[in-house]
Every structure is written in C-alpha cells, then in structure tokens.
Image 1 (cartoon, rainbow, N blue to C red):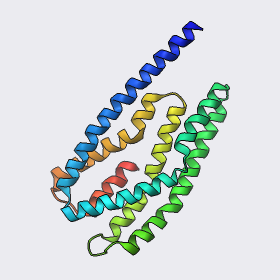
Image 2: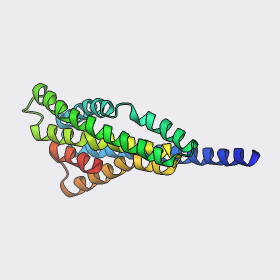
Image 3: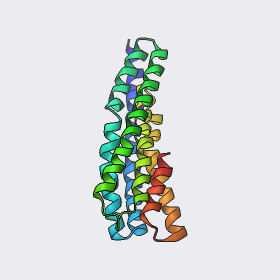
Image 4: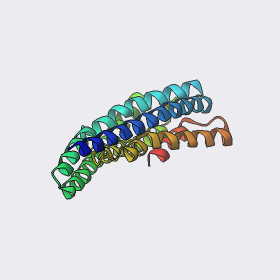
Length: 196
C-alpha cells in the first residue's frame, strides 16, 4: 500500500510540474503572439480580430458540449475499472460529438458575424476563415483532455493550447519577418493553420 501511495505521489508531482511548466510557457508564448499580432495588424484590424475570436471562443466552447471535463472523468473511471477499450470508446465518442457540434455551429457563427459586422472593415473572407478554425480548436481541446484522462499529463499539456499557441506564434513571426503588415484574413489564416 505504501509503495502505491509513493507511486501516486510521484505521478502527481510529475503531472503538476509538467502542467506548471507548460502553463508558464503558454503565458510567455501568448504574450509573444499578441505582440506580433499588434505589429502585423492595423489597430482597426486588431480590434476586429479580437472581436471575431472572442465571439469564436463562445462558439468553440459550446461546441465542446462540456466534454472536455467529462472525458477526463469517464476515461479515468474506465481505466480504473480495467476497461481500456471503454476508455478509447469514450475518447472517440467525445471527439465525434465535438466535431459534429462545432461543425454545425461554425456556419451559424459565420452567418451571424456576416450579418452584424461592418463589411467595410471586416472582410467576409476573414469571418469565414475564423468560422473554419472553430471546429479544429474545439477538437484539440477535447483531444488534449483525453490524454489527461489517460493520466498522460505531458501529452495533455503539450497537445492542448500550448502547441496551438506555439505554432501560432511561429506563424505570426514568419508573417512579420516576411511581410510586416498583413490583412486581417492573413492573420485569421494563420490561426486556422495552427489549429488544423
């Protein structure tokens, strides 16, 4: 029993260190991405970008159907019961439900955004690109939490927002070096590429 407690304690410490290290890196990368974004876009485009992705965050959160938390609990329970096949089935179902829900919500988001946004300042192509980015963003969050359900904290931390923000920061940096200022659609395209 004492050996099992040591193993659990060691796993908890390792998971906590991984999570803390990746979250710190995520904060630094997010700051870098925001600085690059402010350099890439005009102030008006930066405001439009922020508005689009803030509204998008609502959509991809709804598209996850609360499964990001449920998948951790249900997969952990299945593994504790000695049913790895059931854990895999839970992960597949959660990803499928997230894909369907977020894919159905993306055109709703695009339609509402096209109706309410000023088309002179926010091109329709940028709105459509953001809508296309919503399902992959919803999916990577649920996929990362599936790794957490498997008690693989390193994979969960790295596959989650940290990987997306690292890719996004790299893409923003490449755009800045190559072009300096870019249109809003190019910045949204970088988000779609990083999410995909």
